[in-house]
Length: 105
View 1 (cartoon, rainbow, N blue to C red):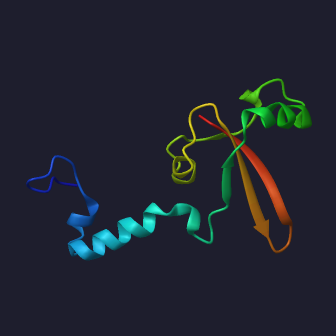
View 2: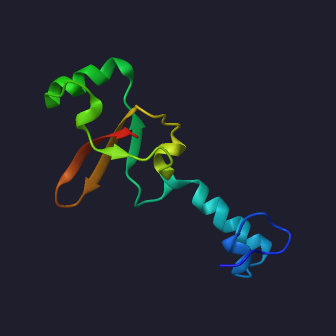
């Protein structure tokens, strides 16, 4: 894709020709990721609880857990930093409440 004159980087909203008020509405809607009904609840596990989680799963350290990107929208919204353990609570009509853990990588 080409450069838009007067801008140092490519802006897809400008390229789509959307009016500014629509672009602003889209940006506002995308900025509140946690409020979307399809996004599961993400929370940082406190340092005091990390050892309990490790013991529960029989892990010596957090290297054994799956990763979540530090720039993942939900992780970024809660202020997660590299190395933090994230608890993700998901609700399903068939499985009920399930809890997953991810390490910010």
